[in-house]
Image (cartoon, rainbow, N blue to C red; front, side):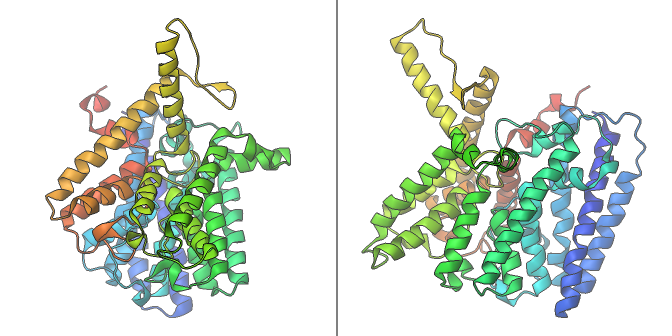
Length: 482
């Protein structure tokens, strides 16, 4: 393990985070919030720690797979530890465990909260809270790679691969830094467009900005206790629904569509077609199910069904209604969407549509083998043969995903949670979704949970955001051996 390069890279990450925390300082000064010192102290501590790590002398700047995993896993943990300081120093939360939970929920774009009354928080805290979504959505280390040419590490693609969601990662341009910058340019443009559309509809500019952060980051933190439902505005619902769906699509397709000057790239992609088809079918089924029971007319049912389906499949976690009160069929369908998640290469969480698609293709191939034992048929996506190593990775990942939900549910049952609340809390944390059912429904918070439950769910959030293997690899003794 090349520890010096790991520590130096972590130092750069902390320096970037310290710089990012200066933005809410400006917001606090603008609105006259009394939490400026809380942010400045947090900036100072993050900057000092970053300098200590960055000052480590490095003889070999090569990053192997083990170094990449260590940088990403410890990077997310350190970013959360220091990112929690403004919440704790300002008194926005009652304990550091709660502050850590809120920050990890933000960076991992989960959107689960322990704050019962967010409307009582200063604007600068609300800004930082949603800004963590935006930073974590594309990846905080991808951002460091994009804006820090001095990173100077060989094999930095392994860092990006360890942090990027999905079974397959690829560079869009020959230089990694250019790829990272390109992804953030696309991300930034989409965020600005979302702000513009919300602001044009009459939403206050501050609200538009923080909701755009959470929408494009597929996080779900809102400045309202009742989330987006507090506005009760059809226009806002439509705009946010559209941008949530767009954020759930592989961002590399936006680059390809721009390069080819044709939107056909989206429809040519097999995963995107399935993703859009799932949204359409689930919206129609749930709209029919809630029409006449929860809502009185078809258009209203479609509006709420489309918003909630988009929110859950993209793992954003916004809510315009408490779906915990919807009919059983609708709730079960939404739970299945928690497992499926968005597309690979997007800011969304979950298992990813491509993995679910590959599982079904694998099952189909195995059934064909029973019928034609001598047949040799490769699994293809977009007319490209998927290597058997990737198929094995997907199958292992899927089994691990389900196993963690089962074991996590059993563990939370010891913390005085009922089965539905425990299972959906683990599933929503692992899938980076936010709200669940029962005691963690959209109308409630995670505040009543024990500190142990919050720490365990925080672990699940990081494991889910980093695609399980990145974190679990560090737990094996052979990972640390020469």
